[in-house]
Length: 77
Image (tube, rainbow, N blue to C red; front, side):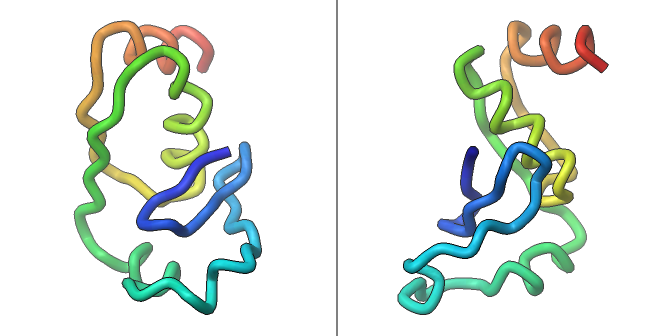
């Protein structure tokens, strides 16, 4: 569905096991989720489902986006 720092997640925001996992040089998923402010900058209606999943899964807790995505996120809740 999407990724944050190459940590892939499904439509519900759950971590997806990836063959890349052991090769990623970066913050582990569990550590990333413990960061107090996790900001995403993402836009475009084609990314709405991935943005929603990132919010659902707790990958992001602050979102900077465009009006179109914001309307879709709030109109379908």
